Length: 385
Image (tube, rainbow, N blue to C red):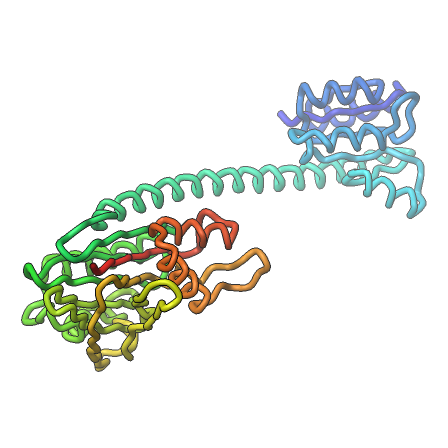
């Protein structure tokens, strides 16, 4: 049964309100003062309160202000009973938190109508509050599922540190708030040739993460029929033939793929819409950076896309950085986005100072004043000795 609280120090008006509303099927509780009314409101949490404006002791405005300040009562519909009719008085009442006014002397039909209208608004507020709670619960469940999915994706990534005869590989991965589509890997094609790649699937959520894992499985198992994994452009061509947007729910991805011959210290690479890999070499003040990138649209954009290879000789004591754009396309505290050039400067300085790869991600987090980002952050550091 709907509860209505009547607060009035006039016993006759209190009796009229109580009898009229009880005849409508409401449960009516009466209070003779503002203090008693607030105590009853906190105890019963009624759907609607009718309170006289002028009472001895605490006024109706003071009662309204205190009731509305209580979170559990903030949506309770509050009607001020008053003989005041000026605009200024009504503005004052509304500013205090009142939802409606009932003029004196009381006309019963108007009383019933205003109570019905107030209860409709109260029910709407309750429904919205429940909907908000349900949405919050669903969001928490979704966040939990995305966190579990991110943990699963992490288990599929290669070790964060691996040391070989002439190559040391370190990686960093920070999933976004919504889980993105980043993926990276490295594997030996034979004892001399090391394949390395980073890819970034469009979109967020499981719809991006699952196709990314599919690409990783194809590359890791070298399952592109008739494709030489020693030639990067052929690998990108094979992926483009399979992963067209029309058959992948409009998903596409960028990728940088390279093959390093440790005997010849030769790197062959190709990219498809991906940020350039950064090669840093030298020492002291003589540190040089080279952007390694080839032309080509992202995988899946056009069926007839073509990809090309480039190659370079890597000097001893060099470092190759391969990454996704999520690590530098981040908003700084001043509202401006960081740039690729700024990130390259950071890589160069990190190389010059001999810092570990973890320092790069930590510096990005410090510069952006954020621990998590809107996109996945992937970074691979290949040290050539």
